[in-house]
Length: 327
Ligand code: NAD
Image 1 (tube, helix red, strand yellow):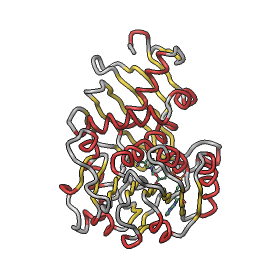
Image 2 (cartoon, rainbow, N blue to C red; image 1 turned 135 degrees about the horizontal axis):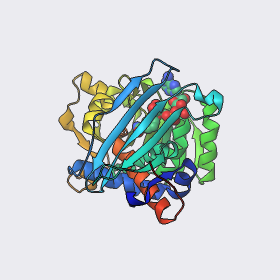
Image 3 (cartoon, rainbow, N blue to C red; image 1 turned 180 degrees about the vertical axis):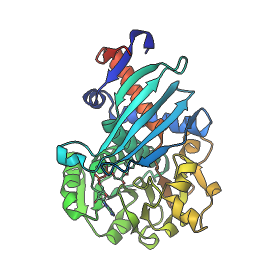
């Protein structure tokens, strides 16, 4: 991809057409590895309440020297959008040529955010879940949950999905996805979900624990994906403190991720949280026994967005499908 031919514009439809789950998985796994070995770093996140339209707005930026990807995702959350037929979460990725600083691509970020978040929990399942996992537990049934379910289902030979959501009327949509991919589906209580699941994904906007420590059976892998802001919480801090904790980025896990509460109460320290990239790179063994409870705190980093956006830009360029413009 060269900036000499002008700026590439890659729209939402094209991203959806070109970036599948496997491409997103590979891009996210690779950048997590680069983050852990110092080849890529995220810059401080800006996230502000605008005091207008109830919107939250911010930037996530970073540089992947190994992958030669520099850029920023800009966007946020506009709660009134749904009434206008628009997605509440809105984002756009700007990619720059790392050699010159020139803008090289403008890429729609809405679909890519969902597929890269699902790739993150999928990478954690691939790296940390028991190989014989059969039951997948889903806590959450919103926009992200279907992406999460589809990506997770490809990581192990699952036979069944059990699900719980604070708003049960949202569950049939998730049941339809499970049916489409050939998995049995059962709506269960939170306790039953813990008792049956070998792998659990949480993807809600909760501010209180939805799963308690005593409900989770030995050997479970949890991917906690909803907590990405100070104050949010999806699982019992005692569960986090008793699990072996992995994350995308330790600094975010400790401050805005699921680990923030166990850290705040002094039952977990930063040194007990391992970047998943260390497992990917072979520098940490990952799961150490069949009975260990592993927990991935997926906070969401800008480098994930840049990684999948650069795949979209490259594929669109190679296929001659992207629009070109000059600034
Ligand atoms: P959504 O609005 O479509 O769905 C929200 C989900 O949370 C539903 O399951 C809903 O029942 C539940 N919920 C809503 N209010 C709740 C409350 N007060 N307590 C408990 N549960 C509640 O949202 P989505 O797009 O599916 O996103 C889900 C969460 O994932 C959000 O909190 C979002 O910020 C987070 N997220 C994280 C990442 C990441 O990289 N870690 C990326 C994208 C989204």
